[in-house]
Amino acid sequence: MDTFEIKYYDYIFTGAGLSALMTVYEMILSGKFDDKTILLFDENPKKSNDRTWCFWDESDLFDEIISKKWRSALFANENFERSFDMKPYQYKMIRGLDFYNLVFDLIEKQDNITFVNEKVLRFQDNDNEVLVKTEKTSFICNKLFNSIYNPEIAKSQTKFPILSQHFVGWFVKTKEPVFNSEVATFMDFSIEQNGNTRFMYVLPTSSNEALLEPTLFSHHLLAIEDYEKEIKLYLKKLNVSEFVITEKEHGNIPMTCYPFWENNSKNIVNIGSAGGWTKASTGFTFRHTIKKAKNLVLFLQSENDFRKFHKKDKFWFYDLLFLDVLDKNNALGSKIFSSLFEKGNATLIFKFLDEETTFLEDVKLMLKCPTFPFIKAVLKRLF
Image 1 (cartoon, one colour):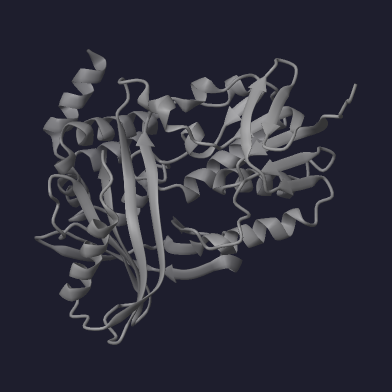
Image 2 (spheres, rainbow, N blue to C red):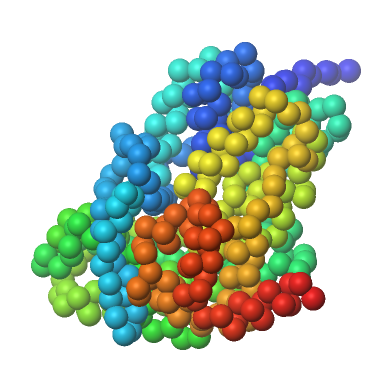
């Protein structure tokens, strides 16, 4: 009878996206896991620039791969526009491929870490070990980090609303110098809302080059041509007569406060979108993932049960109320964000979105927002 040996690893990552690579990156930097065998699976070889991440920061974090920084940003709607200094923050852009190369270059120097370009079919926690089945073979590990997002898990319930941050992006090069390369357009709600929360996101890298992304916080995706039509209209508004598209990207990020962590088992932890690591109220992922990855690596050094890895906090509840409001009235997004940015302290707003404000600072910002929809959402949650 034929027999085969199932390979064993201390840690296995199903998926090698942002959350997995950031966690492995932090594990390497910590120096605490050099004696552990680590295996990463992904059916995508991570050799192309498939996305762009942006975040605000006041340090030199990942400066070696930052493709562009902005010290000023712009917010606009149909009635006003406001440019503001982001000090002490800078808004930073990282190309996906540059991040992949940075982490994989580091991984290649580690004798204990292996990457396999293969699809994971299933995995199972057997209490004392985790069995992982791929298209070609089986593996066993002590702990598994899952970042394969299954949207049906959140859709199977009604307690927590589910929206999406979805977009199509064009990197364009125009004939005319129409962009201010020193100012990032954080949100421009002057585009047609059509009953949703819709804004244009513009990241200029020179006077005639920029990334333009019509972005929605809503329940349903649009046809690709609808996003692209919005980009063309926006360029026309900027008096652009000629342009070429140098790259395209698209994304669909889940926005929900569904407690994915409740699906963790003793030896399996859900990370990334599969673990609720996305900032639910905005869809921002990069900075949020850095914090979660650091916390998870610290957790691993002292704990052995992944069911203990998570804590609800006030920001989870704030996000939940925001999603409750947009779930019932999706057109309110422009009014809510405009109430914050029209006269509010921009630095404090970004600090709040980074989940680093005190309760008094939270109240100061909340008082600027339309009160009735949020009071209604609070009462519904409480009673």
